Length: 434
Image (cartoon, rainbow, N blue to C red; front, side):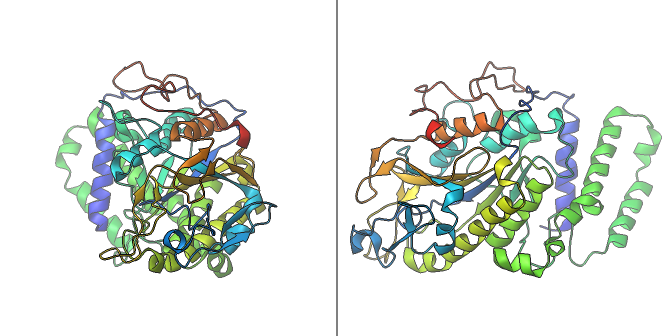
């Protein structure tokens, strides 16, 4: 996307919001005693294998483990994870593993919707967790950040409308670009090849040509458009641009996270929550490994290990982990049994019957394992956990009442989360982890 296209999209989108007669849902503010202030969601786009990450099954044999069947001890007695994650093994005291996630759906779109909303699809499209947090902890409730309250690094997940029935105001600000590049080119904020002076000269020319605006001074819709333009240029030339400058961290810190897209996204996420952003998603693509799964894992798992382990340690060192939930997981897991034949050549397929999530910080206790899968990771053996359960627990830690009303521009009488059993199975809140 060109800078011109990005600016045009941002201004027109903001203008559309400004021209909606001010109609928007207004939620009650989260209580001041909420334990968590922010969320960093590490979205494992495509679905990570639980056997190759946080639920290894070393005794299941080659047809299930392939060449990655080893488990290693962590810094918490009795907890093992896959040997491909040695740095995360030394951070296990900071996170909890849920080994009994389930929803039974193997389709990307439906599974993504369930995991991010806690609901089964019906006639309405409900907002994902990030949009709900933006509603309850965003601009209407004292958020004064220099970037929107819901940010995605670097592109939206794309499986459904994140804001759902809440509308455009609560969609995430997707940065675009690649934070591992130098500089981090955030679309609409920084662009290569166009100087600041040239961009400002273009703005002056646009204003000089705006004869209609000059002919209608005080016009309210035009005033709203002007305010949107000011906001866009504030992002381009103000504090926001400095916020996205990872060179401010220094080379040593950047090296610690890993000089790759995921590692630098983790570093950027830490900077954003440090600046008070309530919700940040890292859209970590590349986990839909139908073919040559293990070859891909040899590249991806070291990135995951370094970036996520450093993020947990860095948040802890800065005193941010207590107030920041880190939520790791995808729409489902991968099939425990490996497809060795052609055309898969060692692939794993979609698997919603049993998979893992990991949570840390913000009131979640580290060094815990909740739930058990069977000997091959194919079924939940103990304590099934459904997306509704996990999301409801996160909302409570954030001070958002899961059973309270969900304000919306349609004026419908809706709850933040559905009643358990109302199209969304539940095993109850995760009291064991808080």
